[in-house]
Length: 280
Image (cartoon, rainbow, N blue to C red):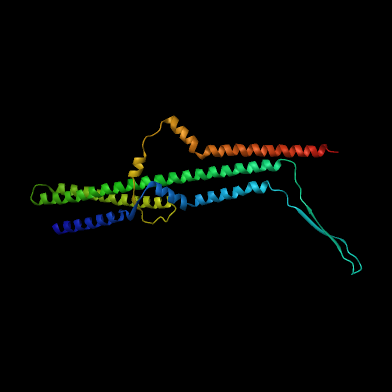
């Protein structure tokens, strides 16, 4: 029986060492929250898509406000029969310059679209920041829980040894030894489950950064985040900061400017048609 218990202790120690090895952070400098946010903004495809949309929208004001294509009409005015005489040739360039302000209204609508796309890009950046921060704090929590469970499992192993020694000298019963072994098995199962949660949290953190899910994650620098929390603002201050930083207000203002410019362009086209019909 002592040999069986000895083998059980050996296998318990090996299992705990394996779980502890899977939960150790990868070597390298500690990653702060600011570093993680910078990596995510540079690696996430959503940021590149938003930047491409803004670059494409910046070309629209030039396109919609440009003049019509010029008309180039080459012609032969006279083709003489006598080959000794020269041919009369001419080329005509025609460019229209409209007096209506429709193009200027279209340009303002396109410029409002640029602001709207920039606001949507800021909204995407805030969403990515929220995902990275959530994954950052979740990973730190899982690592702390695994560390605590590892210490509890080690303590449970020592208690099992102590209970077995006391049972050997008759100071404890077999039930005490079984109770300690059950507690040790419970902690080992919880440690294995939390280790799986930790690996999932690391994969989620890498995904939030736009990297491979299986990439090793170094230790996290939490002290800088805690030091940065000086004071939580009240309701009025929070609303003021949100109105200044949230992109939804900028998007709404851009939508209003675009709708107003399109309305002016529609009214100008209607006036131009009325003038054309009024002319004899």
